[in-house]
Image 1 (cartoon, rainbow, N blue to C red):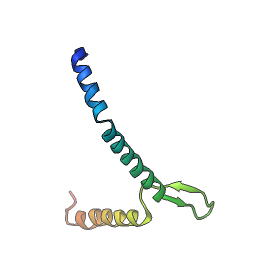
Image 2 (image 1 turned 90 degrees about the horizontal axis):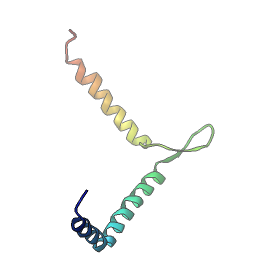
Image 3 (image 1 turned 90 degrees about the vertical axis):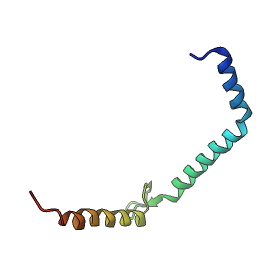
Image 4 (image 1 turned 60 degrees about the vertical axis):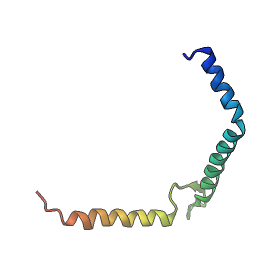
Amino acid sequence: MMPENRRAYWRTRLLERRQLLYLIGGGILTFGLVHYVTHISETPVTHRRRYLAFTKEQFLKLAEFMYNLVIIDDASIPFV
């Protein structure tokens, strides 16, 4: 445990910067909410809404990158 005077020092430091901490926390929550809302998609058959971490465009770009990495780059490595 910290000595009492050290604990009081940090408590006052945090209370002095309370507005900054609220601003940072609010910014993180806002970013998370915007990210969540923009990544909601609807399934074509059931029309249910769901969260997808990657948009369709991001997923296709990632799939193309992985394809190039596995197929093209590994083709130059001889089998043992």
